[in-house]
Amino acid sequence: MENQLPQRTVEILHAIVQSYIETGEPVASRTIAHRRKDHLSPATIRNTMAELAELGYLSQPHTSAGRVPTEKAFRHFAQTHAAGRILEAELHKLRTELQQIDSSEDRAEQASHILTHLTSNVGIVAAIPNAERTLDQIELVLLPDMRVLMVVVTDDRVVRNQVVKLDEPITQDELASIRNYVNRNFSGWVLSQIRTELSRRMERESATYDALMRKLIVLYEKGLLDAGLQPRVFLDGASNLLVSLDLAFAREKVRELFRTLEEKRRILELLDRFLAGKPGELTVQVGLEGAHPLLRGLSLIGVTFVLPGGLSTRMAVLGPMRMNYPRVISAVHHVGQALRSLPQ
Image 1: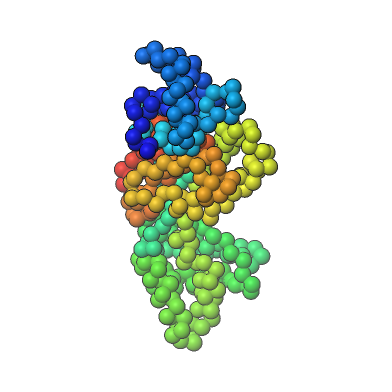
Image 2 (image 1 turned 120 degrees about the vertical axis):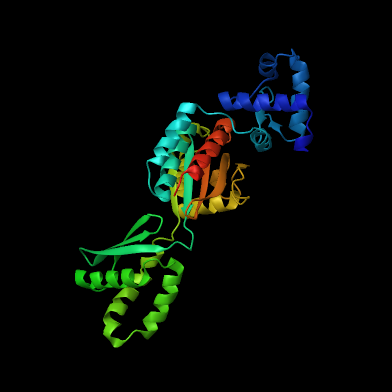
């Protein structure tokens, strides 16, 4: 079992993983012997490496080559390393950056950039609004070609914009009437309750409001009051994978991987699948091929928490198995802590 390895065996295993992270080359017993201070002979280390290989922690690409850590080895290494320290200057900078941003969602977007900066990997933050979010106001603006800009502002100062294309003409005066109707009747209501009440009123309003309600129905069906409830996914640093991925990773596979990472739905599914633990509990997932074959050879370190105002947040770093686990764990821990400590 992973937790039953003798201490010296664990030290040798972790030294192999650390060497491979630094060089990307198979690790020889002589390399580990030079790293240790207890003067273990290369022969003794070779014997330990053979045992680790039998247990599935190491592989040997070629007969004469050194050993390469497997996913099992990376998992053991990652899960036994607590969050390391990052520079105080970096911590101060990230808190200052986040404090200068008003809305929770904008802070989430900035957090993805900070994670990328701190880890040189892919920073991902998903902001998932609470269905109990309440409406502040809406604004509707007529655009050319029968398009309408729908703006929804919720009580946590999050502003959502959406442009929709209509099938029949509408005037700015009609849009103003719809805006006034919604703001006058539903400001302060929970969004999910507004949709229920609107459905009821659409069936009961008098003929005086028939034309208004008909146009409101059109905007409603185009997602007017869903604008504040759609998850937002912020991903930064995908190009870092070009540097860190194994050169054997075919160019066409890299392009397909990038297309996969551009699909927000797939990113949400990835976070849902691997960050399903308790809120605030750090998750380390080594090897992601279970979610998608192209993600084989990648690792994900992340956490789920709820921000002030009820915004459920999933935050993670995606990178190669050769990532600097202590630093990534530290970055996820500290950025998450900073986000949660800020007032709404």
